[in-house]
Image (cartoon, rainbow, N blue to C red; front, side, top):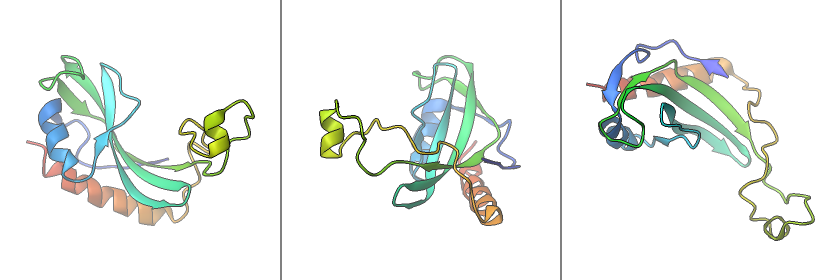
Length: 136
């Protein structure tokens, strides 16, 4: 994981408005959201089973995350690499695994080693600059 030092940290926005705006840049709400926190995720690079993401976490300051008017505060963005198993799962009891379509396979490495860190720090910082332009 590479934490990024940007001007986004501490900025505030309304969740619904920000979600609509940031979608135009290819971001989606991270699957690990809760009513009091979440993240906007974007893919910086993907090849076979390896994906490098930019994750922009936030906390809910007022309201709950399932409400458009929830007021959110951005935390420190970071770059993370996930390595997933693109082959068959060896669980003999799973019909989905035997057909190769098991979307619930455990990742090989949730926080994979990122090579060329300067490249990905720069890519992440440039992506965050575009997000900053959307924050009112």
